[in-house]
Image 1: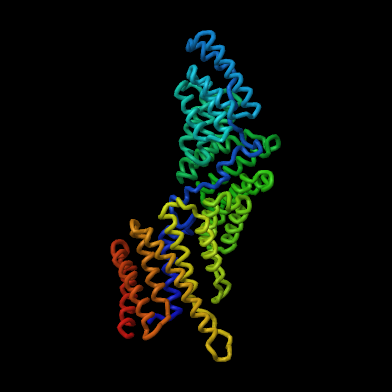
Image 2: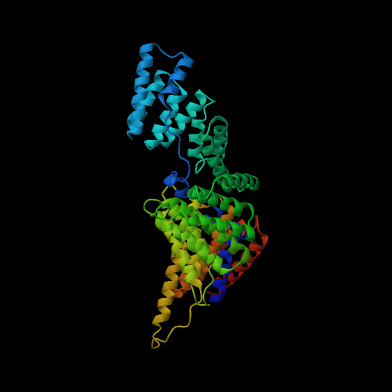
Length: 503
């Protein structure tokens, strides 16, 4: 029979080995590298040009542009042209009068009379202002197809796509906009192109894209006087820091990136510029996480946790549940690496468990099964480790055994809760043999750790049988990709079989 302290160490080592395998020896981010979960984008990436710090979308084009297109295409008889121009003017005035639905209807009618770049572009502007992102994308794509020489639609579509949906396509569109626009719109497109390259570099992890972004950002920084445009300068610093930390994850580059971010934070308060404030703290959290990975120093771990927690109050869970689930999961992964104060301190594990439970409670129903399974595994594994952690000797309660009974009952309840989570994860991982193998191994250890014996040892026998079932499944799976772990599981199976025969 495995001693209690040994069981705890086996479970903890198994879980940490899983995390190391998941993240190639680094702290797992966003729940152990589950790609679907990483794509839950922070809401501050999609924030509209906050406080006019960065250039916004181009406004609808005037009637003179439409008239030139009608002349060029020879569109319509005089009465039809007059009706189109009148309707266009109504839409134009409605847009700037903030009656966006009326503007959208008017521009669509003009486009039906004669499909033109100008009408399609303005329709996209009205659709976006009315809250219809897909309608805006469709209209601007139609405008580009009607007149490939137009730069305004490329600019607006690129600006819409690059922060979250498709930074690579956004980069391509903004390049085309620069070639077709005149100043000052060309300079605005250059600003967003540099930022889009930074976003694309982070999404792809490409050093070449990071270098391109860094060069463009530094050129803009040199051309943007800090005293004349302090907020735009600060925003460029933020993106320069992101590119630096990706391209040069060394101490000197991280120090420069941190300096840039702290300069930016001096301009972006949580009250006035919440999205940029959150971006700065997110990037600082990434930097501190990287420093902890490189040095193992706890102060960097604590700093990373604090930076990520500074973001939470800005995005209430009831309004941003997927993002808050992602953030809680990220914080839980970091808390798991916080060292205990002493041998009896369970607060790092307890805090991590609380973060995982919070993340689970916030996952939407349509969360991909593999994402939910990873989070269930994390929760179940930590709870199992907590249940088997050796407890300090109890203070005497008069010899009645009440303290021992209470501890045993709590241990069993916690293990049962862990097993429920792990079995739910296993059901979702049938098509993922590597993750299923780790889950089966942890389930085997959890069942073996339940010490209740029951009448004539029936309860103990039943739990040992369950442990053997899960260990054997884990053994068969590990034989396919990790012979050493399979060998250790075989030793566990032999010990449990020996105990089972002795009952």
